[in-house]
Structure formats: structure tokens, C-alpha cells
Image 1 (cartoon, rainbow, N blue to C red):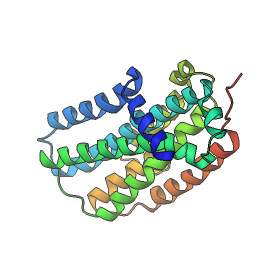
Image 2: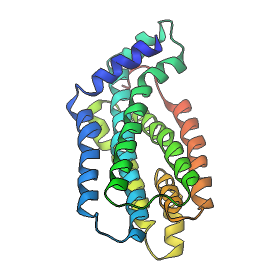
Image 3: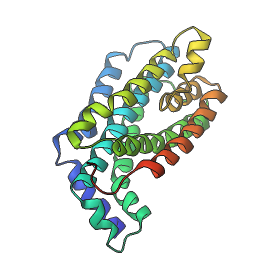
Length: 234
């Protein structure tokens, strides 16, 4: 049942124009940007890769999961699935699975492409992998939380803006030379995962970003469990 639901959701991802843009166009634009920057010094690549990862999380995980879960709730799909043989966790797994699979494929394509055109290999692969693997569920949970407060799919274009703005601002300000500002920025949602990618690629271990990323997983998970509604919001 879970696999069947996941395959159905995967087909739907490529049928909707908004999700199709996030799934295909975003990584293509990031690869094009990387190609334009292919001659920059090796020391500048870590920051660029971390920032791009946050963009992928925001536009391909947070935005897509927000729209998908809001749409399934408003169309009563979630209510019908709860009356089937699937458990609540099975419903979430079936809907979220394709989003995660597509996002992993995007990450592999983007980072593989950047290394092929001249980006250096990561100095601390373990830290980079932690950032990548923790960022994905954090983005998914952020999308589910945003969907919990979205009345309709149209409304998600507004409700998701604060999450995207905070994440991208954190990724951008994390590159500043002001240590206080950079530290605060590296603790913001999604930006902390991007900071792990940046610092891991450069060869250091950012403890603040690591703790913040794990902390956001718990906060977002609790918030999603507490506020997500299975029936349409009125």
C-alpha cells in the first residue's frame, strides 16, 4: 500500500506545473549558475555549495511538501487514506517518499555536476553527509508545518514565504565576516544544514550548526505532530 501510494504521488509530482518547476527547473538553474562560476577559486566553492543546498531545500523540499500536503488535505485524500489499511505513518511515508527520492536525485546531480566542472572534493565528507542527510527531513518537516497553517494550495504561496526568507537569509548572512552575525545565521532552520555542508567542504566542524540542525528536527517534528490537521482547514 505504501509503495503504491508513493508511486502515485511520484506521477503527480510531474503532472503539476508548480511542482514540476521545483523538481526540474530549480536544479537546472543551479547547475547553470555553477557553470557560470566554474573558474572561481577553490576556496570560494564551499560557501557556494552550501548556499545552493539551502536553495534546493527551500524550493524543492519545503515548497513542494507544503503544496503537496496542503493539496492532499484540502481534497480529502488524507481523510480517505486514514480509513484504508495504511497507518498514519504509512500515509506520511507514501506521500513524502517521492519528495525525498527526487530531492536526493537533485542533490546527487547538482553536487556531481559541480565536482565535474572543477569544484574541489569535500575535506570532511562525514560532516557534509550529515548536513545533507539532516537537511532533507528538516525541510520536509518545515513543509508539513507550513501546510498545517495553510488553508489552500493558493495560500501556500504566501505562507511559505517566511520559511524561505529565513532560510535563505541565514544562508546568505552565514557568509559574512561578522562572527556574531554568521553564528546566529548558521543556527537558523535549513541554513544550519547548509552551513554544515559549507564547513564540512572547507574542512571544519561547525558545532553550532550541528546542534541547531538536530534541534530544529525536534522542534519541527513536535510542531508538525501538534498542529497538522487531517481534515480541511476552514
